[in-house]
Amino acid sequence: MIAIAKPITLEEFLKLPETEPASIYIGGQIYQKPMPQGEHSLLQAELCETINRIAKPQKIALALPELRCTFGGATIVPDVAVFRWERIPRTESGRIANRFENHPDWAIEILSPDQNQTKVIRNLLHCCKNGTELGWLLVPDEASIFVVHPDQRIELLEATDLLPVLSNIDLSLTVEQVFSWLNI
Image 1 (cartoon, rainbow, N blue to C red):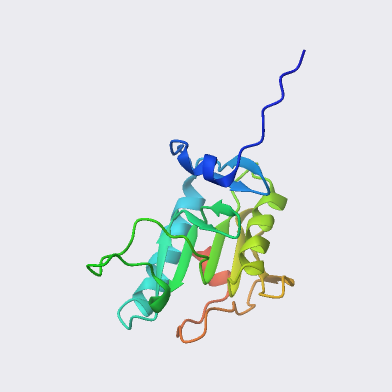
Image 2 (cartoon, rainbow, N blue to C red; image 1 turned 30 degrees about the vertical axis):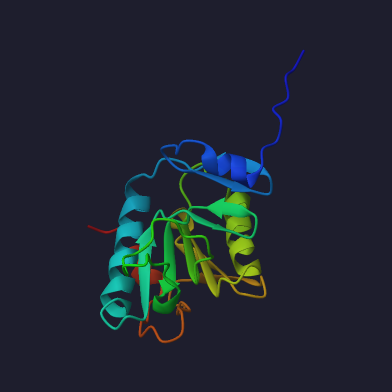
């Protein structure tokens, strides 16, 4: 006899202890993210540093790594979640909140080896369907980046293609520049 696990709700999922690496809940299913490896970690760090160097001092936006975002009946953990400054949840004292119960304005995912590309694109499509302005999926093995637009249109960018970023962020990056960060 095969025991079938009863599906759980988002509320039940959020009561479970956190996993390492993080688990997400989308479409009524739980998926655990793979453990980040070298390329993934370096790209994630460089993206956060690059975006924050330009957007944070001017209080335009803030890039945060591995941040749980709960919205639209799902809870995801983008590799990089970028929030426009005025949308960052805050406590009454003005500190950043621990819980983000809203969509990121820009969600960035980095495909890890053996990670299911469809599941990651599903996350980005969910984001854009629920208010996210821009999604990126970096594919290190192919040195390419899929861009997900708010209308859920997906575009493939490579080499010297200029990457779209959130409006008001004065950042100009090509796909080549992003993957050049892997050469240390």
